[in-house]
Image 1 (cartoon, helix red, strand yellow):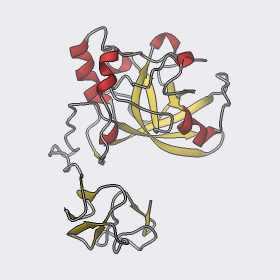
Image 2 (cartoon, helix red, strand yellow; image 1 turned 30 degrees about the vertical axis):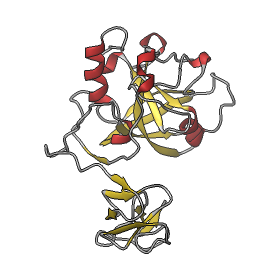
Image 3 (cartoon, helix red, strand yellow; image 1 turned 90 degrees about the vertical axis):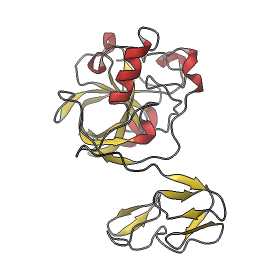
Image 4 (spheres, one colour; image 1 turned 180 degrees about the vertical axis):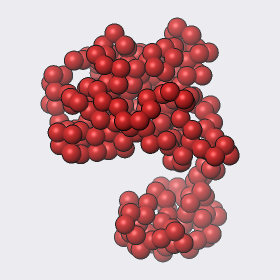
Length: 249
């Protein structure tokens, strides 16, 4: 089964996904795929004529095969596209893009966190909860399909986690936290000598934040580094995360 993704106007080509990202709990729109879902999991590429993709997602930003994204039914998200109704499209992309889901292939037992980053034409969907998965993420849990569109995950299991990843939200989106508060501050990046804290005030690529609440430097990392011990009181420097009490890239 081959899915055809929604193609956007060239006007969207100037939009790009944010570089920095936060993942935090939000309130998922009521009735939007509640609980565990089961359907057919197909695969697609970010820019391929055979997949009706041009490198720009329904959400309005550039994407690539390596992005951990998946597409759900366009109708389930309201049915608008840039070409059909730009105002409704903006509202709908801001409402759904970036929502996090845990996607599982029962046949391999592998799971992966993925994010809604596209929509597909309902003319191609056989079950309401079917999803189209970006090729690299699909390969990670099922294996490389080697171009064979008949290779699908059936059934694929997936469930929204109640979180959003701001790297994959639509332009202009502002997700309140699950408790109704403001979103956490967006990380910023600094050059050598700029102030940093390794969490929300980051350093440019290739630089590290020397000591918490320190300065961006090209010297070796000296706290929260990859492989270091971590806890709730001893955090890791972003983009590292604390996994089993060890800072992991």
